[in-house]
Image 1 (spheres, rainbow, N blue to C red):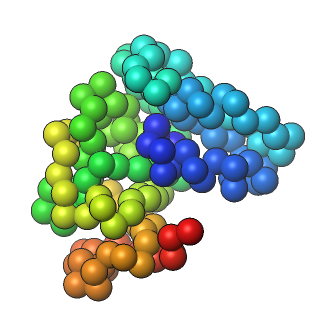
Image 2 (image 1 turned 135 degrees about the horizontal axis):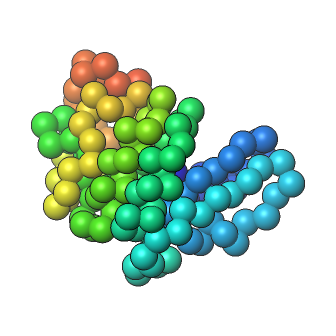
Length: 155
């Protein structure tokens, strides 16, 4: 799981499962649960307790995940998945490369936007979870590109 706030929001729901969560989001260390484990990658700490750099990248390179949950700052058919933070870009690319299935979580405000650094392409996405405010024409573009899309209402 990358360090995005929307991916982080999934952690309480995942902690009810018997799984291991590996993340570079330092705030994830605040969760305790007997069914699952949370592993922090380590690395250079940036704003909001985000870990990056060689240590974080190497931690993700040392494993193969069943699933990745990736949040982003921008997502579009032509530009792919992007982030504004240079230090996180390589970590996010590594998470995507080391995962069997990639789940991207993005709300309506991220669509047809591009941030500074590309972390993946649309072909990398197995499942896109978004809200119901994304225009149907945009959702249809992702479906035509082979992406499974789930839309959920915002709270």
